[in-house]
Amino acid sequence: MSKIFFIFSCLLLPALCFSQTTKEKTKPEDEFNIKKYKGEPGDRLIIEINRTAWLGAPSDIKIHWRSLGLNFAFMFDKPIGHSSFSFGYGIGIFSHNFHSNADFIYKLDSTNSKSVTTILQPKTTEYKTNSYNEKILEIPLEIRFRSKTDRKFKMEFGVKGGYVINDFRKIVDADGKLRVYNTKNINHFRYGVNFRIGFEQICLTACYYFSEVFQKDRGVNGLNMYSFGIAIIPY
Image (cartoon, rainbow, N blue to C red):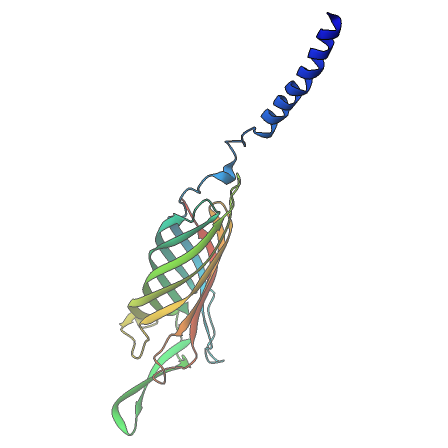
């Protein structure tokens, strides 16, 4: 009897061990692994405070520290599968303020009275404020990365195109305040690239416009806008 029990135990023990091993191998993955889930849409409202400037301005044109700009963008965000990437698109308005010593001079062509060229020269009179301001209606397109961690790391690269819907020069001097709208020979179509990097609701941001400020050969050639600053992203 004891021999039969011993033989039966020897046959049953390997089967039990195999069954336990099989259960351990088929144990399901952790269902709470955040990397398995599709990312939540985010970064819908973007507010930027920027330092604005021109690249390629004449050497005697000096930029003032008050050259600040604001950018507001309302975005849609579409996560790409279960990855950390998403696609953003929307509409925005960028207010570019360029404070400097630049005076906008209209130069007539001696051979064609209808041809006017806009040139920049240092102002020769005293002033308190001398600025050129543009408002650009834009459509941004962005590829975004957001880490799937408790404290989100963010990085974004995109392009944007727009149209100058308003421009004016503001001068404050001893004679009072003056605004001059619709500067001649401005290039109203704008396009460029933008970049952001940071954590959570605060990012560093930069933008460069490949389009020039003036129409080709109708103003200062090779004059481009750029900006850099801080982006605040409430949600």
